[in-house]
Image (cartoon, rainbow, N blue to C red; front, side, top):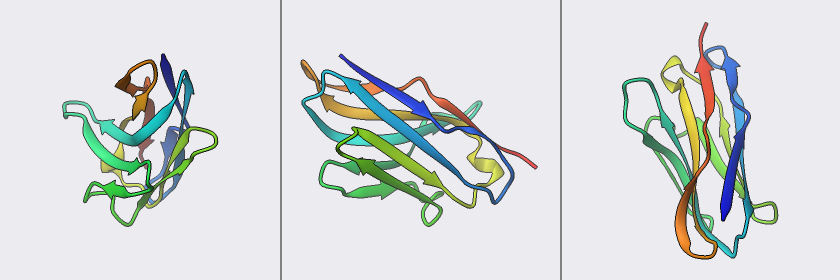
Length: 118
């Protein structure tokens, strides 16, 4: 099976930066796509950014120009650099991966809290 473990969340002032990391481990044959999602209280979980195995990226309009997703293939790790954080970015951030393990499936991390507050 596969485990995804996020880290890097925390409390930051508006305008500040955080870098989230998500490390995938376990039986991994291929990683097709990895993404970051977030869910604020009372809201649905939404896609923030994603990156494919070819390196193509996609961002939610609300984070374009502020967030950058990147991937370390050797470490099976994906990062989310978040700059210019706004109060509206406060949420639990989840890592998700489309990964071929013993089967191809979708795995989720446990989430990491990001709080932007003055």
